Amino acid sequence: MEQGKYLFGPVPSRRFRRSLGVDLTPYKTCSLDRVYCQIRRTTSRTVVPGEYVPAQEVIAEIGAWFGNGGTAIYITLSGSGEPTLHARFGEVLEFIRSRGEIPAVLLSNWTQFHLPQVREAAWKADVVKVTLSAWDQASFGMTKIQALSTSPINTSVMVGPVPKSTCVVR
Image (cartoon, rainbow, N blue to C red; front, side, top):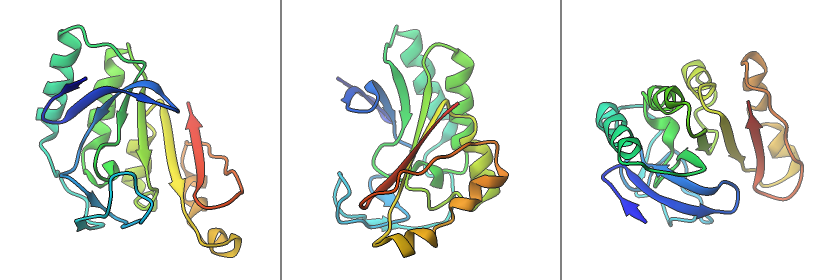
């Protein structure tokens, strides 16, 4: 497994088999602090979008990975924080898709999807996988699932115990 400044893997994944990870935020920069997060507690909690790492450096590293013959089944924006906090994550998705070789995946906790620019950028992924969390069915009904109704992203929600998830494939 390789480890770059912004890339890690490819790693084995239950959902996406062999996936190259792209990290767009510093360690544990997230909009939530969930006790069940696979990489422990959040150390930098924020909802403020920004260019947390230089997008052009990320794109250059992905380009070099392709140039060196990198292979994976998917390239996934995930990493150690919430990728939709990065103000230019859509540009990274565009670059991955422009290569036309490996599908781009966006893993998200959904908290930024109320922002039109986030929904628009998310549409650039081949697969969008979001986790919707709620403590009961009534509170789940208060989530902003309707935010996608004005977006070209189609969504379906699986009703069941927390966390609730949706996977959108273009």
